[in-house]
Length: 488
Image (tube, rainbow, N blue to C red):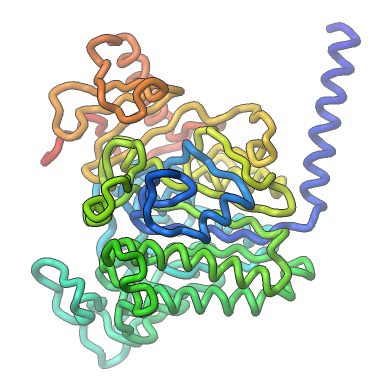
């Protein structure tokens, strides 16, 4: 080895150590991650200009002050699996949940011994809180003398508050909920069909009309920021995970927003969702902590079918933007989601990146930011995109991502190529070149059989290793069946 190369290695290593030291000794930023429910890529004005017709001034402001990620994805195109991936940095399909979502009263999907992003922040001196929808399973203990309600039957009644009550009445205790999975505080509900049963900490505390959930979430978050701002200024930052109840059904815009867009209730509810972002930004501004607070806005999957109401009333509007598909599908409209990040102290305003990222990458990115090395059994599928925030090259950028749909079917993407396995009941695999065909309209599987085999082998490898990142092999929780077909 020449002396020149030795010097290069020395200085590169020294520089890396200096950067790690600086990160470890800089004031730690507050972190707020806002996760909308069923919001499509094209429903934000800043992401689909010229088409998006619903006013989203708050997310637009976030984009103007920070960075837009144009190629951000969820690991699944439905709710519970995405939340698992975000909190653990592990692919959802490595768990027992092989299709659909978690129901009421089911055991927790996040194992008791698995560390989450909440634990990561707690161990770095953060105060942690979640406000909103959990939907990752927990069980209940009835209050003394209370009786469990009969299980609801029939189609969900979005106009009936009593239909959106848990089977467990006020006073019931939550077992293995968020405060046992890395969060100091919790205020919210389990999932949309029990959202009128309000939980604080580990207990159902009251039953509210469903239209009140989103305003009260906003109030709780605003008051939390007010209460924690002084600590944040004195070296004890906070992490807030804010998984919203909207614009998922029940579509219940409050009186202030109903009729505000002239495009129907769904558009009004999207507008109210955007307002939640404004509430957060206003709270940070008035407390003087906006500069060193990272705020992220994203969604758990693409838009649901009822969003078509907006497209009918405003034909230029595209809920999925230029993408094919919606919630539940393997096409990009099911899982390519809004992802806007603002950090005024560090991130260049009005910036944009096409770096491929997954919501589960947030864990490794925050570990990188805080100079924490993740153990082998944490964040197995999480890859840091930290350098992208500063418009710097990523040494090992994400090039591959695996997706799962509502029926448990798989797709894998590597660079511009995307393979769907027996998608939507098709008789053959589907292969798309996203660089040339973002709308996934031309199946190239027969044209490139070698590429199909390569991607399938890569998927099989990532499944077998129990991880997709460097490190010791891990075990999946169950045997993984790659070849699911609709209805089986």
